[in-house]
Image (cartoon, rainbow, N blue to C red):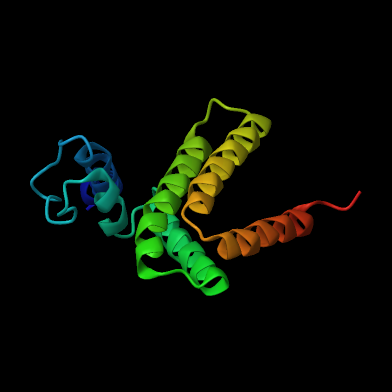
Length: 153
């Protein structure tokens, strides 16, 4: 009985770590047979949105990107073609921000600066896909969000 209690935590730890290790390797073509059914698409971009419940934040990123796209679509009345072009830009932005967040070697100030660069680059790409009227609305919404985000002096 004592041996079983001693082994049980190790087995639980292995069961929790194994899916995370295989999820990291699946993007580069390395995967174990036990988890190959979880990540059906082989494309890195599509694989990030199909993985479920990992603690890597991939699921949250996808939800955040979907929410942002819905918000933009409502504010700007995006066409289906615009939505299809903007979605990968937002997904890429969120993935890059997540990568910066997970990098333990950068300081918080460096992370903020890098995230700002990533957001500005994504906004420029999105803006290029919009009509002049949509660009006005987009620019106004960005100015409004900056004023709300600014801390009181």
